[in-house]
Image 1 (tube, helix red, strand yellow):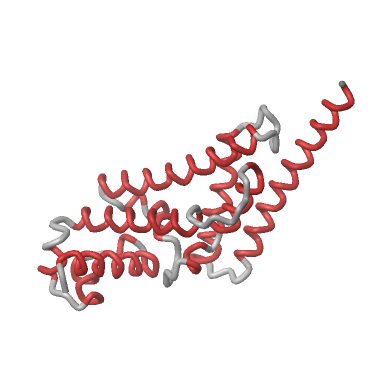
Image 2 (cartoon, one colour):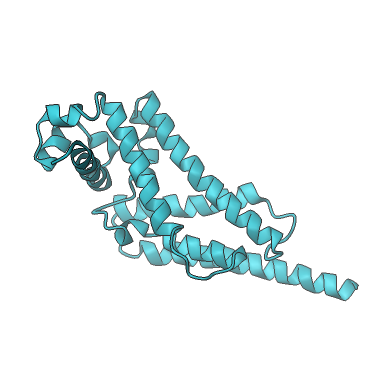
Length: 208
């Protein structure tokens, strides 16, 4: 096995372990056992445990991006693209083949227990999620699918809250109905947006 193959194997095993048990459970020993390597074999690629954990978060973020943003369905932006993203985001780990929960969401839950650099990496991943929502919401606003005075940051906050609530309900509380409830919450927010935007559009037409 080449050095690159070993590194890739270590990160995949670490990603699966973070998904199944959380980033706080990652140790050189736990990863080495599952990867059928010596601890020295893992340390050769990741001299510090924090390096390994940060790299696992990087791999998780890349997998999320490819799963939720990398599929071209022909949706032309605006509100349809926002809705499509939200539907892909909820439960994306199963489609990506991970054995448990979202490693990024789990790391956010564990933030209080993570060391400085790993904590910063988890916070940075959350920022990417938030900025993705803001970008999609702004695009919908630019296409007049939303009111022009929509509070973009607040709507992003609300939608991120649904995702994190889904994570806790599905993986911490083992609620078998978590997906449906999260999708229902998204539909309610979208329906409210569409109703308000539609009313505003009618008012503009009546005023012309």
